[in-house]
Length: 636
Image 1 (cartoon, helix red, strand yellow):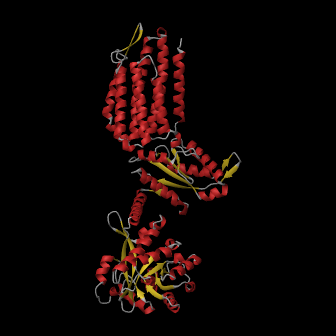
Image 2: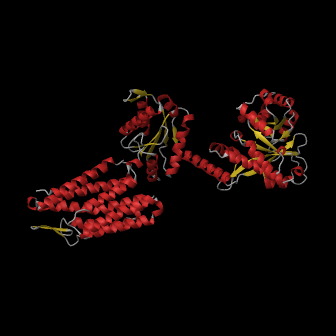
Image 3: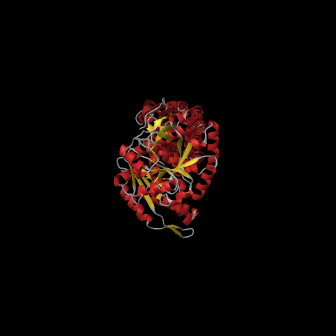
């Protein structure tokens, strides 16, 4: 007869563990695999325990060999149990799980010893004895408890030594489930009649699940695919490994599609897409990031990426039908894939690369984007520039260089242009063409421009500009900076702080700032009332209308260097006509990019008032500029 007072509680525990096992998201990361091993061993231990115990209660009904094998298998599972919890502890506390396992090989000697004892029991009594009177404990029976205590202790030691890798709640939870296990083994060792160890294991698993393995931590709610956080964990474990298949899928014009179909319909469509992709590629892990971006990760040995792309394209040629309201969604996609020889060097590096490619694919052609090692090198370089910009702006380390503007007639210095410079992590100077786009994109351009204006005012207040022969310093304003409604107030306060007259600082704006005529007119008028003068920079690089320039109170037009260089290549009449038109409208004219004596003479003959370029001087640091122009110098 079966002892149902023993069997039924164990059956309930078994069903509970099975629910945990099959409800667990099977993302192939170390701690998830370690948790699944715990569940598998618990299921095996309880199942074998129920069978072995029930058979022992009817000892004479079964052959000795059957009892022997059943109990050996049970002890093997029993010995495996603390080792699996130990594996999980390593996985949650160490970023280098695979390497950590290799380092902990000596710790497995205890497991090997106990496992050997269990297997030897098939031939000689070690852990238990079976005779005509039934089942008895063997001489080495208590070794299974010593093994369990050993793995609990080294698990706790691992948690304490790696505390910095765990959040406060994770640290407490990790200690808690190991302490629960410890109490369970103590009760089992000292009160063997009370078979409650499985209950303590269940409590430990509940603690693990709530803190580390809750499916909500890994699953994106709308799609049911794995989340961004899950992708980061998976990539951490693929670092240094080759043969990784990585395919990004972007729903083209996603935001427009949400407006056309409504957000709720697109959300239903995203779930349909996720379900379809998971069904089509069960060996790949599907992640949903945001804004219609999916990523498939797996082994290149399982699938050919070209075939996957072809199959997905074919599926997207058909509509996605929402059964609730029978609406059909017609969506287009683009792909971003990692090159075949690509090896993940860091999870953050890979995430930045594939997300950057997905974010920029909207402006690309219909061709797919392949990210390679070269792609990541460019991204790393760009990341370095971004960090340099942020650091320089936030710490007020943007340097001001000055390039002289000279009279076209005498070649004597008459003004200077303030140019911003930022240094990279190695101390090398980054030119504005490299870092200005990043400053504009990440919102640092306003602070950068204001710091340059302040540095120019500080230079003007601490140096004798008249002695240098300088009548003004030109400071550039970005179009984004020009949009600020408080620009006049802020710049006026800086002038007042340094005691500098507004006519000493000319503000250069590019043609991009002229797109919004009403705003430009209002901003310039307000600043003109405070004494500021404006220069139109880089004329010819944009879309300026010469007639329209009459409406703006510029004092000077600067010809873009490309316009100047083209003139000396083709000698067309357009530039001379433009210069004459500007002079007739009352503007003075500056020619940029002067690199030779011929160019200097040519621009003077066209009627330009001022010249700027490497023929006269490269941009100089304020120290070099001061040293060069503080003394009387012959004209260039």
